[in-house]
Amino acid sequence: MISPETCTVEYLGFEKPKSPDELKIEIAGLEHLIAKAGEKIAALKQSLVLAEIIIAEEARMEKK
Image (spheres, rainbow, N blue to C red):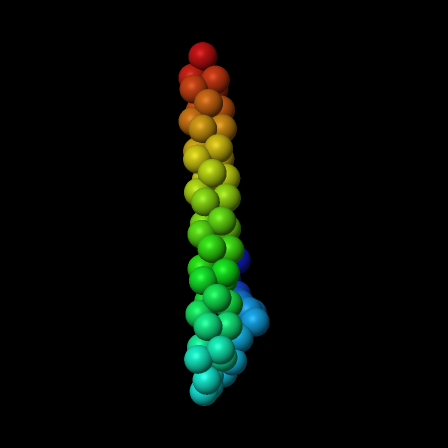
């Protein structure tokens, strides 16, 4: 296994929101980021399940 990398995420927002409009933009940016992270997690889980199925099928075929 290779060493894990440091990953960063970017979103549109304000580092220190001061007005209600800036807060709304910051919240919307974070919500969008969370949604994108959820999509990536779901895709990774799907890839993991497919990999596990392939490995199990290969092991089953070798036993025959």
